[in-house]
Image (cartoon, rainbow, N blue to C red; front, side, top):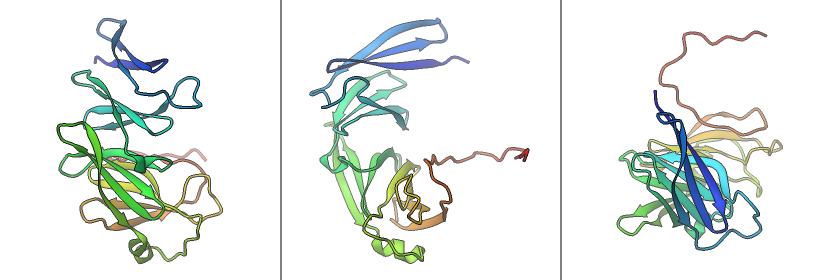
Length: 214
């Protein structure tokens, strides 16, 4: 089985892509992109370490949430686009709708916003913003305070995975939810009973055995 390892190198306002190919056992400089401006207050590694993936494309977001680089793993095309101002300081993720459109979903307190890539101009545009207050009170028997907010964990196959508070806020009752982008209806999954980060994972098949040595 052949594979590739992708490494990003930051040089002033340039991001260089270096790729290792298992077939040849060699590293090579694939391509590079220039950023319009370098993020303020960041010395090195000014792309987020968290890599997002949707529709065969890898995404790296700049630490200031102003730009995003994308790598098409099939064509190795490397590019940079400006992100909408509505994403600044908010939790968001990149995924795709049920019909395969790449989208960005973000949370603004108890509202959910959706951005789509405008065809032909490589620009993200806001598609809609929907308040979730009524939906939240429909499915959850709890009261939210002024410090509560939705946290976007992942977007996959037309569904958004959410939490009702940021991680490490153990003083607030928090739930994991799913949101259908087609109907904008919420469904409660379960209450979070731990303090830490979460990564949604869908298992194709159940393993033959789940064991515990304790």
